[in-house]
Image (tube, rainbow, N blue to C red; front, side, top):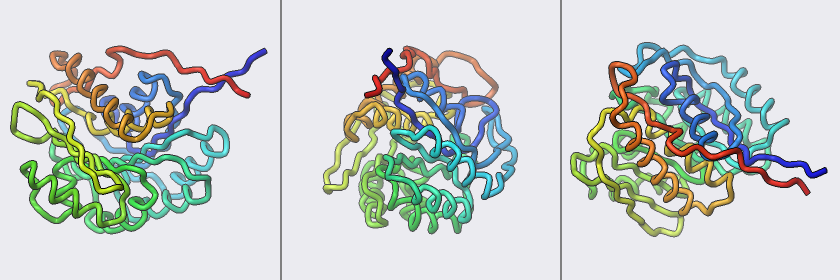
Length: 277
């Protein structure tokens, strides 16, 4: 009798009770792309589609314990890290992951919500660059987050190029700098790889407010494709396509009174079976 396993992806991220971002978006994305989802809760934001009202912390030890419990049992093929809003949390995650074999890590440095609400403490940024950048295979900041990381205004494509080059010097391997906040008919995101090359991805800017959780979804899609065995560049390209289609298919749906979610299940895939040998 044959036995099977599924490509597994773990998300280490915050909560979103409205279902469009954070761990909820990550689980939806992994599932839609045929992967088995596991999760570790880092924070409990109280939010809906109109914004974040409060953030309740999760005990640091509880975060480490969650990571250990999952990794000791269901070892993932990729990890996505999202909201880590305190230096102590960053240090705990890096230390805990360091006790296990290397796993591809996609780090979405969640610092500013789609609504514009800042989600991170100032001193956390330094700890992130020192502890998480070195273990991440790719980081996926948006323009606002790139501005905080690079210490400069990021408004144009030239600004993005300058900021990306600067952030690379902090020790991260690859960067996807997302251009979703550009005021233009076309959105251009820039991929800076560890060999010093730059690649651009261009998509149509869709007329919709339903982009809540788009950053979480993109980083999760990259992790899912990595878990499925895709090379990093291909995982990034496929993830961009997935997010565009998820926004496009959900752009006219009314969910909530603010920035609505994506349609993660526009073309869901069955869990992918890998035969055990």
